[in-house]
Length: 228
Image (cartoon, rainbow, N blue to C red; front, side, top):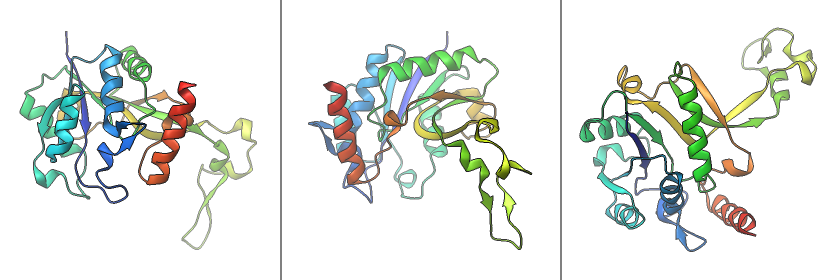
């Protein structure tokens, strides 16, 4: 039986909010919401927080996650996520059939139910390479044109700009809350697989991705309204 590992990447630096990943949100550090949801899901065998920052790791350990001290060169502003995942796989010696649930700590409205449902959906599609969480957006964007050249190019292909809304396909935006994939799919190219993806649909309300102080304030309001 493959194991299911949650990986929460949470470097110490941040431009928008000082120490964003442990910034206070309704009397809890931001990262605590992700750890608590993963624990409450009952579907995760182990939860790891990858960080270059000892304070972040201490907070993560307090709330029940395992510490994974990240190499500093993987914690820069421009550092991509793929090498962080690779470091985790190789250091923990994960098996090829093991499943990684990548959870960004900036999604405090993602719940245990979201994680459980997403994992169930991932398992329901054995031929998929990965699952990503999304929310639905206005499909009238398919009517847009791409500029920059001599002529306008219809974004959705020929005649899409003149189609009725009900005839246009549905559109979904990734929200970065949940990404699920198997270790062997990642190791094919040492990258999160971006083909044969299946969507896990979340609401726009729950898809908030905290990047600024305004986002943090909005998350506080939404969490309070959820508790009422």
